[in-house]
Image (cartoon, rainbow, N blue to C red; front, side, top):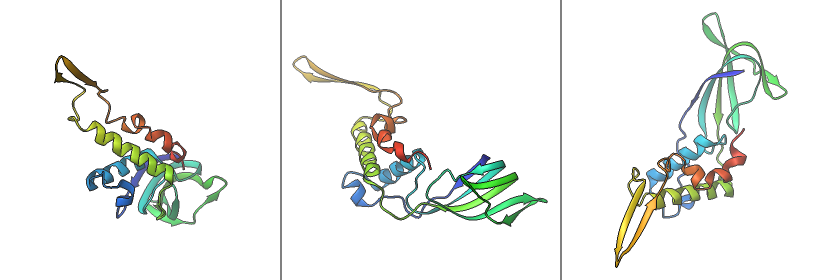
Length: 177
């Protein structure tokens, strides 16, 4: 089965509780970092709707977890028509065709300690690195008496923040559904 399209809605709220960010994170930053983490992994916290459009035949498992499939529709005669959910050994088994699967993904349990630790690493990495403008890759500071301090960071520091902070290592078990 090929996934032609995945349309994931927004949850009512991302994991932004002050317990997860302490006093360190501004609300906008906290939500943005949770979106970044959820974009990297397959697990979702806080429910949201998702629709997949599939094409082909064979077994298919929702790529996000936990997923509760609500309807499966097949494209026939110019319109989608609801069908029985086709159970299979690896999730769902589809005959040849184009399908639309509507589901709800996410749950309301607290994220595990490893995910919270990854969030904390990412938050502190971004805050530490943001002492300088995001576009700065090299800086030097004259301290006086002939002393100076130099700073250099990769131009991709923000794009690779999950990896550079060590958060990606903690999130590895959550990458696949």
